[in-house]
Image 1 (cartoon, rainbow, N blue to C red):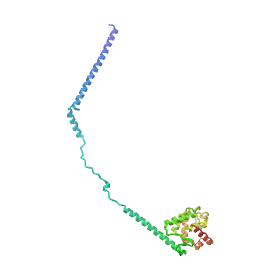
Image 2 (tube, rainbow, N blue to C red):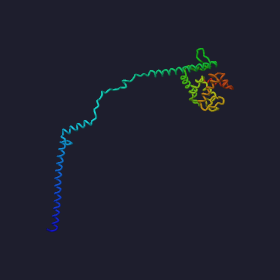
Image 3 (cartoon, one colour):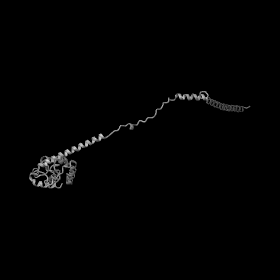
Image 4 (cartoon, rainbow, N blue to C red):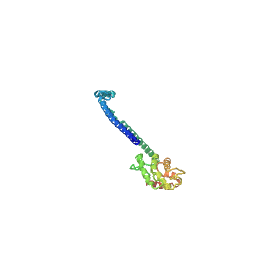
Length: 269
């Protein structure tokens, strides 16, 4: 046999050996798998730990029961309702307290109104103001001012009337200030606004800042302050309302014309 044939024969033998090895290995693996499967089936039949199925089930059941939390005996459900047990409440004391406060406030206001009316009556008496035969109060021929309506109604009425009179002037919109100052000082609410017309055309021509009444050398920072100061000054130095005597004191050089002009304006408010 040649050397080439010898090598080929040796190669064929090696190849045959390898193929044989793989065949044997494959057959052995299949057998092992079958054996393993049989063993698994047997173990399952015997139980997880080699016991029979009945013993294993009993053991597992006993373990589960031992590890479970002890049962708590339930109590019957009882509903606790706060509404059912709520105490009965009443708001009557609170309402009564509010009523008492409102009543006290009404009484205070009524007392204040009476005090103002009494003060005005005294002031008017000093200046000779009285009533005509019908009982209607007159202010030297001017319609009377009704002070008996009380503070709120008085302020509302005279705010509107004075605002209408001062409309279009530098003092426009200050009707409430004039009315409030008149109530506080017991002065005819028409007097100060009408003096402003006689002296400065309702504030259009003032010889000093915010002095619409030609009143000495007085200077005020704003109209609100000026109005309140002027009305208080009238109450203190000139009385309740315009009279010839008050005119002579206010404007000595030309008191007759001053009185006529101012009085005429007061009839239009």
